[in-house]
Image 1 (cartoon, helix red, strand yellow):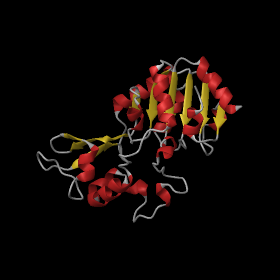
Image 2 (spheres, rainbow, N blue to C red):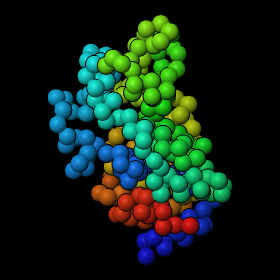
Image 3 (cartoon, rainbow, N blue to C red):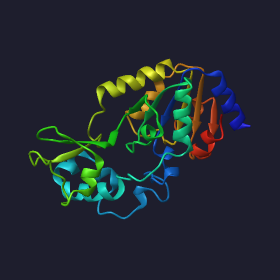
Length: 239
């Protein structure tokens, strides 16, 4: 019944916005942070939240890159049915934006264009000295632990938003604008506990709010429909 209700909402909507977190990509083989087999439950000398901070990147750059190469560069991952369905809706003119907390680039790989990557992407990397841009393969395959610019030997940093860093202004503004214009907001694969990203939901003024997530979230009491299944399974079943 829940799937049928979601299909009805989709059919009646013309301005769908999708807000997604790590749970959207787990079906593509990318671990999230908080599940049983997620990054928080794997053995490292520091918790992932500390490793993926601006301070840690600055003070322990080698250890940052060891973790980053090992866990944050799944360049062989492929879009799953959730990514593909959203790209289809965009082509059909039903979906006006995807707001994602993920940095894996899978929405773009699926063909989506209107993607607001709140936390950046592993597919952009830049020299902190001269600004030269590099692809993720350069970082992955660099012969030393810390990747350096081939032009000036400056330190390369992934264009991802680390803990302690602010979100990109234009990206944030675009995400807010899309959510404000949406008539259907589908929030999926996120615990809605990471701010400021989770706070964007408050800008929704449309007709239906749908939550697709394995566990309860702080927004459950505001939702018009809650589905406790895998995101790809749910969206892949829709037309």
